[in-house]
View 1: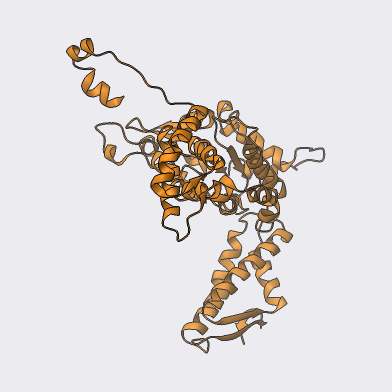
View 2: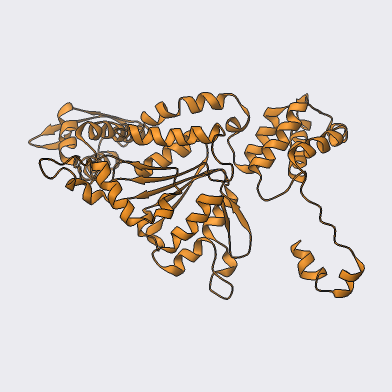
Length: 419
């Protein structure tokens, strides 16, 4: 249609002599009938057999996950590629739902299990427990996130909106970004992250959808729209959203309402299969004021949400699936996070054939030095990097652990030492 407008419609003589006939995209049911008529030709060409379930699934899955083309072409491409893949097998068999899903997983970066297998329901059922095993102390936040994902997979949400639009609110270092990373990993989809501190000016926000014609960067396209077109099934993380220029909220209103975004060249990015997560520290500094006074009944979460409502406009908050409040880190949470970080360090040492054992007083010392509700888990990282890793580095590079071995970390004279 763009070529018609550009070349054909400009000629009055051609328009007068030729009648314009619009051919709309066929429906899903019409496409299924088209593919059943084409099935014998593709079976003969590839030497395979397509069952009815494969035909129906190819049409339905392509309509849902392939966004930049139209039916019936994108459904035909699926069965054609699946047939070609089976043709090179030694003993080609029937092309079924699984084979179509494998092709879709490669072309659209969709986890095959989440598309075709009943195992996906088991994965969704255990998603909460698997995330709780990796994120500590944020049970209510994880419950809301998992519930939003499960609702979308159950088909109970609007088909023309993102799978979920979530705002994570809480102090620094309590796991807001980590929840998004773990969610993407557990769902088997990619994580697209934008740090909003890079988009504090009006002209930098324009880079997300592409610079206007005549401006620097017009040929580069939009950073956000290109990323979504490349990975239409993903978790989109907009970190520290309150630091971005106000224009970002106008862009996100359209995304949260219609799951579409148009770049500077008129190309559409489809957000229907995107989980949109935004993080914010807004209101975290006011949470400590919630318990001031003898008769105060305002919780820390309510205090943060009050400030969030002052920071963000009502039309923005009204389009969110949920606003998730993250709690401050307590000592129990800090202990669990420390154990996790020490396990990650031990895994790195095992790659160098080094085994590390920490005495209980060393663990207690690291916890005492690294626990602070103000800075969250990042202070634990700094304590480990400042007091433990330099000792390991010297032993591995210049000491007795060049070829591997066993290290015992103990407390001696109030400081950490190696035995």
